[in-house]
Image (cartoon, rainbow, N blue to C red; front, side, top):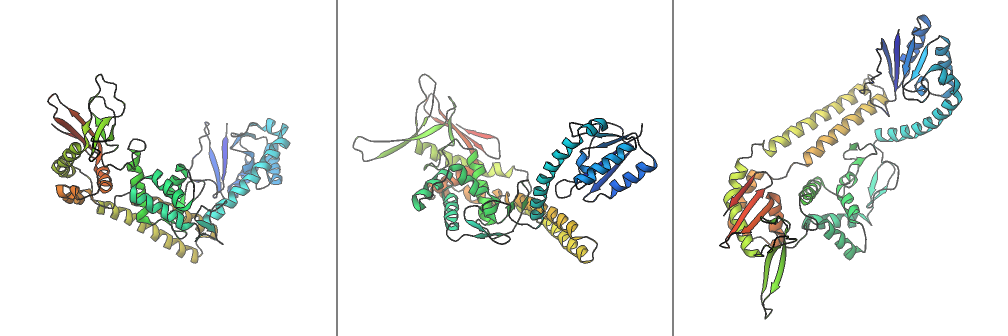
Length: 437
């Protein structure tokens, strides 16, 4: 039995790299991308030597309109070819003939939807904003988003507040108090992560094109936001903006509960005391509270002692090397864009092919740029030259110390032995745990 197959792909909607698996041994596959030149060849070959079976995905691939589809189907059927449409309910020649009117109505509805998708795809190739309302802080211009001077400062202030304190909920509360602008925490997170605020466009297919309009968030700010969000995701709920530097990091070794910071005053109310106690201890008797200042001092001593050695054991390329590799990749992609322009001017590439390939290269550049933005701005090995000095930690405020603790520490486990000596274990983010008695 001679079996052939035909595939039509719209370059605006479908990649040519995808390979179809038919489940049958196919003698020849005719494949078109954008134009139906191979379909015309198939029809000519079938008139000369008709195959036994033709495999297609959908009857709609036989033409650009209902008249072409109907004529070509009838022509192939008159040659005695069994037509199997793999993605349709009616997937044999007789079934298709019986239900042809119904199938053509369905194709007409799908073609309308496809035309809308093609329009959106053409706008993507022109790097036009997607349909819909512009994000808060922007308004729609002729061919790009432009800054809304009345609302962009609100977004900018929200971002700066988050960068200053590292608290998403705190920034949301600040926005309501300062501007009377009420937003949900999820909306605030979208503001911080939306590529539009970083000067990029993102489409429904999740593809990103960089540097299409004026950003509200700079690249350096965006990288810092992403690092803060990743860091906060490791912390227990609602501890990201806690005023004390050890909040969310300390756990009881015995009951494994998170240690919360508590406060008390003496009888004369002249002096305040801070302590750490398990949040939900089930032991009997319950694990005891431990003075906060004692744990803080021992933590600083342990960091100064062990952090440089722990960092020295990290066997990873330097940040500058990683950045250079990414930058070289971007430079190569940009060189390809320049070559495409030359090929278009030489009329080797037509306008549609040029736009499609340029769009693909620009999305690849955006992906590499996103990877580049995830690289920490400071080399950990260089930073530890400063942080192993005890006075560095003592000179910091609690909010500053909180920031640096969370850069290095994943968890601190503490307990008291029978002699009431403090045992402390630090688990660094990038190493195995280190224990002190």
